Image (cartoon, rainbow, N blue to C red; front, side, top):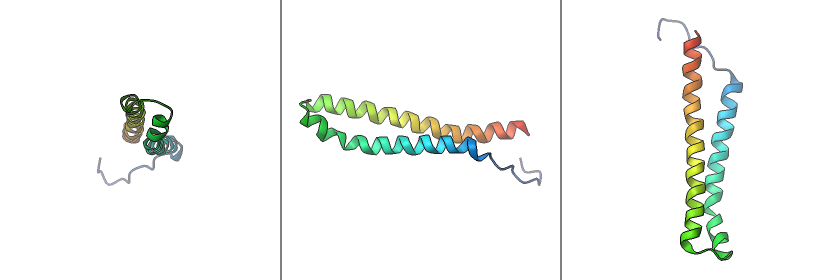
Length: 82
């Protein structure tokens, strides 16, 4: 709403958790890429290792997406309070 009043600042505590979760999900996704050779050396087949890595990547993508949606939801909730 642009009625001339400045946008209210978002509380830092609400965004900090979403940022931390987003960063951790990204780090897990990056670290998962290095797990593939380890899984192969443990005796898993290529298909089994790929399935494990795929599930971990998909899970971290869901968590990162939920955290990203939280950024927008916090902003919408703040607008509806005013």
